[in-house]
Amino acid sequence: MKVRFKFLALFLLVASTAYANPRNDFDGDGKSDPAVFRPGDAKWYMFPSAGSCPSTWAPAYGGCVKQWGLSTDKPLVGDVDGDTKADLIVFRDGSVPTFYISASTNQTFVVPGCRPANCPAPPNLTVLPIQTDALIDIGDTNADGLDDLISFSASDGFKWNVRQYHPSTGTITITYASAYALAGAQLPIRPISEQYQGVSKKDPQVYAWFNGNAAVWARWVDEGSAVLFPQPFQGYSPTQAEIPVASEFLGAAPGLWDHILFDSGTWRIRKNLDNGAPSIQSWGLQYDKPLAGDFLNGDGKSELVVWRPGDGTWYVKDQDCSSNCPCPSYMTPHYGGCAKQWGLNGDIPISAAGQNW
Image 1 (cartoon, rainbow, N blue to C red):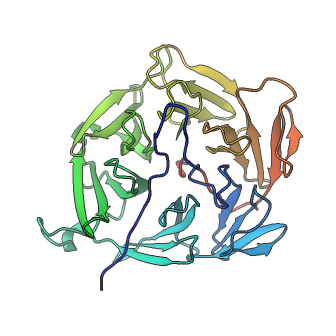
Image 2 (image 1 turned 90 degrees about the horizontal axis):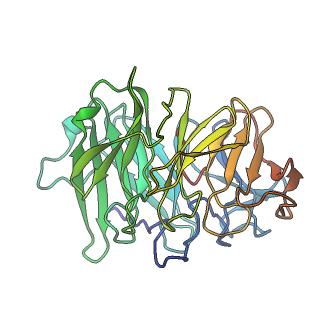
Image 3 (image 1 turned 30 degrees about the vertical axis):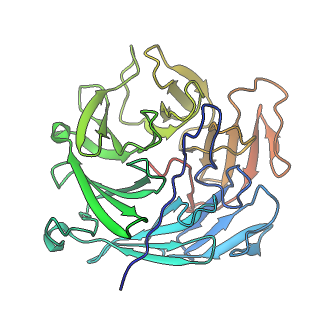
């Protein structure tokens, strides 16, 4: 059986001021939508900023609901059918690790992986090797406009494995790179694959912390090599408590993502291509989950976003607005930002930057 796998780019750099829809835009209006995956019933709950549910979703609780996955699955989002709307993806670990994809066009895709010991041997390797401790991510790694599946494992020589689908030929290839210098890094190692080089492709990347040393970003470059980048926050040494968030926050270089660390409501943001000190902003509380997304105005830049597990509330702040900041009609003003209750304690909020906590 031929497996169909077709991922479109999430954030294409098509012009200096042009932006594609954010990864967590489910209704196609160019803005992020609050959404959670509820492990208890394996359902996705989404509040559409456009005001109505997509055709493949059902109305529920004033928003929308769709069942996809199992309670133990890991939720991801991406655009697999090219209609600019986020599609539902779950990764299911097991003897045959597998991705299950429900597209907004009502198509479904099953993409199996393999354990390295059981994978086909090169040059015929077309199935993504996935270790039991692997980190899973998504991104367009070769600028072909299609998202690729990314697996990174510390137990496999700190290796990235990337699955690329080529629609013109219907073929699949696996490429890889290793970052051996990460040996000795302390867990957790977090995936933060985004576009850092300005060439319309995402760099598979992880954030690691070493005891007594500054944190580093280990990055895949040029589809086959890996390099370490020292932490970019001059004059400041990150701690293990800080969580990286990958997205374009400042718009200093449209299409390029910034380096961000979050801890207990403090955001440290360093512009891409800027060697200066990071800007520091406050938004959120201890135990909030830092997210990324363009919820307020569709300008292509992520706002400061946190999701509060205790009450399931989304708190969003436009960092470019200092006073009388407008909120979408479905949100309420909150201390200079906007708020929307959507979700329950135990839910997994869906971020444009993935889940890194």
